[in-house]
Structure formats: structure tokens, C-alpha cells
Length: 212
Image (tube, rainbow, N blue to C red):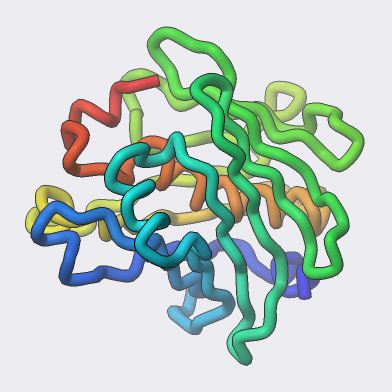
């Protein structure tokens, strides 16, 4: 199923709005993933359910442990992202449907930028990401001094930006040399970026954009 990503040049990741967010409650994160023509390709949904999951979202935000599962249009699992509990250097581990490790996305220490590395299944750094301080909504994926992919947050409208977590991201694959696994990691990184930097309006809204 990851082969479908090899056919894409651009994809849009749109967070699904839930009414409870208008009242300051963090709900389970759900995303629709569409191709550049607006057709649904995949869906992603956080799996931490129940009352304890609800409390964890309110109390710990993106520091909590959780899983994000990716599904195709028939609601069959495609891959899953596993986020363990960490206070520092948070990461998302990506695995295929059959449990094969695809790679990991790991946050790095930085002062003025949002920086993380993308590792392959062998632990090698295959892409480096550092969001420029003057373009806090743009995340270039670099290798060998060249930009191979990009994730950029798009304006969702004043009401959505102020009162909800309904974020929209453009995922662009700029180099055909990217492998299927690397493309999957870039897509998962869009979800990771949303959860790390844009999720909690209750934690300070725009202030959260500059938090590392």
C-alpha cells in the first residue's frame, strides 16, 4: 500500500474538526489525507480512546504516549506511528501494517528553530529538518544540502486558527529519488509536526509556534 505514495507529487493533510474543540477540550486527533486533486487517499486517527485517554490529552498534550494508525479507503490498516512518553527528544516510530520498522522521526535540541531528524530502519539519518525562524510554518526536508521534500502548514481561516486544532498541511515530494519508506516518513512527519507544534490552542496558541 505504500506504493501509492510513489505516485504522488503533492498531498494535503487536513485535521478533522470536532465540536468539543470549540470549548477547549482536546479530542482524538483525526486526519484526512488527499491527493492534489482532492481525492481521499488515506486516513489517520489517534487510537488512545476511553476516559483515561481523554484525561491524558487534557493533562499532557503531546508529551503523552499514543499511537496514530493510517488506513486506506476501505478502512484497512496501512501503517502506524508509535509515540512513547518522553519529556525530551520526543520521537515517532513508524511501522508498516505487518510490523516492519519503516523508520523514526526524532526531535533534536535547538534554540530558535524546530529541528528533527528522520532515521531509516537501520537508524541512519536520511533527512534533516529545521524550520527557519522567519518561516515557522515551513519544514524543509534536506539531504546533502538539497531540499528533497517539504511540509508546510496552510492557513485554515481565522475561526479555525483561534479556536480549534483544525490544521491543514501541504506535503510536497520534490525529488523522485525518495524511496517509498522515505515518503511514508515524510507523510507521518506532517502528523508529527501538527501534534508537536500546532495541536494545543489551550497551551498558548501562537506562542506554541515558537516553542522548541
